[in-house]
Length: 289
Image (cartoon, rainbow, N blue to C red):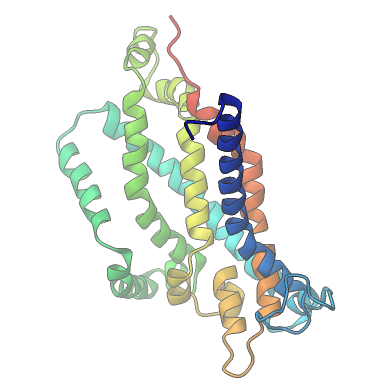
């Protein structure tokens, strides 16, 4: 290396970087290409000889939509509905709670924050039996939030998502100078006006991040939805595809791959629409004098 000129060393450095980047890109894209190949392969198997099958066709997609026992449209709509409602409610409640914890001083504040953090230490799998029991008991009192209801599942999602989100959003609130609040109070603004008109616009980066994380987490959840939902027309996409492909003597990998690709479209669309908010919005927000 010491005998190489500056241009040669720079060229070698660029070459190594490009090779590493290409390897990482290939490593990330290969599973997607394999699933795409499986969805276009009419042989209904994952053991394809190559990424380009011999008889490319849309038979698996037709099977997915035309088979009576696979209401794919209902499944994906259920996933979008559950995830969207959970995201809106979670972001709303989390924002209000984080604002209270960050700006107000009241008795039990530190204890509640430590309790929220302590609860998040335990794995969610430990609470599955308790959650099932609670939802079953709620069903006897309020059937609308019991087993096999989307409302009951959404309430469970809200309880699990707000703990970490409150800490994340509180930390972001703490970075916003209190001079904004004090200036607004001097001008006669209420706490709600200060929160909604001054602080909330500055919270856009963390709001977008929490919304995306919540949506993806609920959209891709399988365990809770499988435990709490029992009817085919109530299943979200992940549970529906699993039930459809879990036959003992018939593994429908082709339609499963087709459904997985179509199910990934909402997540991809969200990333494409909000990528500027995620990347560029993190540097926005300042105090103007």
